[in-house]
Length: 193
Image (tube, rainbow, N blue to C red; front, side):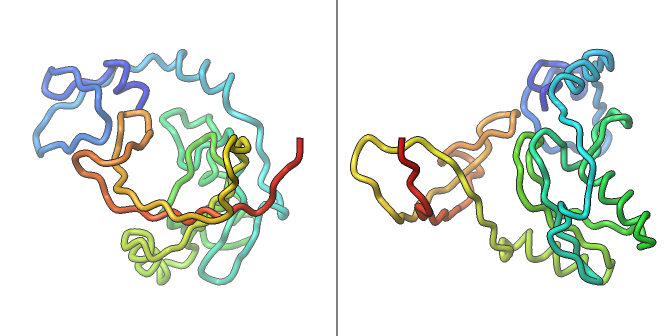
């Protein structure tokens, strides 16, 4: 995304700055990649990680749920030396003597921590794909935020259509291509100063 946003990608000779743009068959895509800059950025922002049993939150014959830390990409990147959660889970499954089949239907941004669910049995793949694509999978997020200056609302529901804001993974409310999203917010704990 950073490569596209910085003007390092061209489609049919024209610089594009918006990631996720659909392509047509036969279009020529060119990218100006300076690997030394990619490595330098990764070396300063990636965090060391070792997948331990403590990070395996759930496992059965079809699924494995993993606690992803911040600073680790979910998917492999263009640099094969860079770690990713997928590569760690594949290696862990191999050490367990399990099949190296791994279905990935969700991702968390590199700097986001949370649970990532993987399919480990090809028979579960179709159901997982349908659950995530059809928004049947329920996701819960926990956030630490500043205390409001006004009255504290303990529970609210945010209903808004969300769409892509730019090529950096940010979202915006409304606009072309926005899709309905509902977020339930519940205050679990209030920290005192």
